[in-house]
Image (tube, rainbow, N blue to C red; front, top):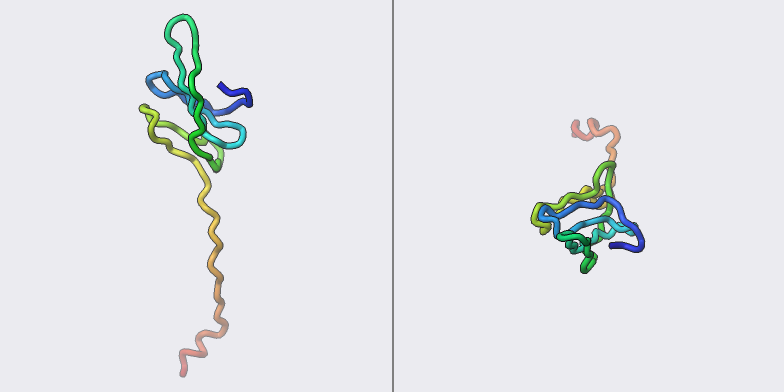
Length: 94
């Protein structure tokens, strides 16, 4: 399926496709045929890039192979600045 390797394989429930994570973080899908006495690998497609987040399995796939749940990190937004007001009670007396 891959000459460059891959991790975290998942089968489509009907056994006609296998998904795996390439070394560069791309989720791949390979059509397979394991019926009979041989195992044939068909087209291998790049699906999308995954930005892994946290320990554990980085993704899961629905039984029909059409939707994915991805364990990822949230976008790193720039935090809003903090304003510290000193002696704010003095302003209440006016």
